[in-house]
Image (cartoon, rainbow, N blue to C red):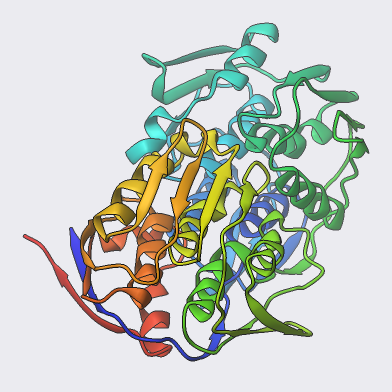
Length: 426
């Protein structure tokens, strides 16, 4: 286990926001399903993105060239059965996006993972498998999962309040089937932004899906993915850490963001504005200024990934903030509601955990102390930003969790003036 010790300091300077992990997964899968060669630029080879790239190669895509932040991929000519199980590491996107792909092969394929991914729910797919007579077996409801059978076109009923990843997973594969399909959403659809991202990337790779007011999605069969060159835009969920970092004390310029992005997490700008945060937008650059902010009510149903950093922001904003509709956070890399409330309270914050959210009473400063990342990248990064307004040093145990999505986060923190010592325990 690794640790970092952060001495409280203001952050200032320019920061290049890393590429969107969500879009990176989608671009790699679409490139892998295309006939021909695609060049994907501005990728960050975090653990999650590497898991998806390796899985596509397992299915038959060929990596022609890989350097720094780009990969050239030759799409799958003929699907092949992977020699070994597909290792999804700790990536929920890799697992849930690619399970339906096994239904294109019709042979026994095993998906594996580690950490909390082993127990992430997959019931939505199990219901589809039963209806389609696809055989599957798991380890008492947990990974490894072995799937054996062909996916047929048809009508797929999916709940919209568990995870949009199931909907996206079907969207990748249903256009390739020999017949038309329909996805019917049986509850209110949460995380609409992620479904929009999927359809947008598919469209750019030549695949069309008709959206009937997010209640039904009509998908024509026998479509073909077309290879292309694609650049991944900057990630608003990662930018959120630096946006809050600037508002808490420092002038930070965030580059590499598309202000017209479909990313649901772009709502961070609306939320911090409502809380009194000051920033200036100029093309792809957002200039953040230190601001006196106040608590508000936040509905997190469309932006669950923002909750850890919003909890930090609320802890240092005047008054009460209530975050609701965030129950799904209990089945992420950690139970994020429990994790962020527990660790912020160790630093001297006043956070009350509800079944589906948090109530946070803001303070001018926090104390500092020893906290744990819960092996969750977003918890580690949020706690790092909290250190800005602590009176004592913050020690974060399990600091290597950032490798999942943002491997050079600690380097970027130092670049902006963060004072950090890193070491390994044991």
